[in-house]
Image (cartoon, rainbow, N blue to C red; front, side):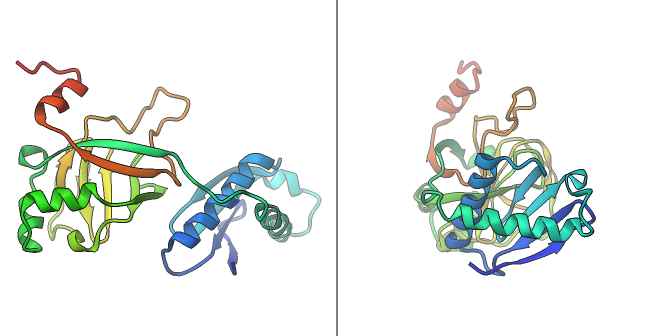
Length: 234
């Protein structure tokens, strides 16, 4: 796959593989990150995968003898790219997320149903029937940008964002769906809420979901939601 590589400051590069979001580009980026994990080069500080790009932060000290650290990183990346061809086809974890749809937990579900001339039940069925992949984590700690939303329920963002969206809210914005791990302002159409915590600040890996994960949503009742949250159902 063709790519371009550009400096991002003096200790990072951004590699762009395409200007269009696609499953092929996603899988290519995941193979490269798997190779980075496996080889763990001494110059690597951190990498950040996104929809069509991979940002790599490197230690400039490791290239102190080079007249052009950027050029040295480009050469190292080319070697890495060749090695990544040996990676098996990438298949991420399958994570199942329960969601309580509608009502006070999903105040925009009715709007999405009306917007598409569907019933609320049809919107829920379509949302839970999608084949989802997490392309990247961003915006707020642990927020997953999830591809694979059925076209039939793709809906524009709200014209006026809310000042506060409760943590664990599930939303739709355009052709994306996502989950707000923490309470924050936002403009996504909120259709439900999961009882599952996504941001785990006391854990070694503080985000439940990772780029490359496959995702399935399934609908639960309020009683099930309260049970999973450890709340009284009385």
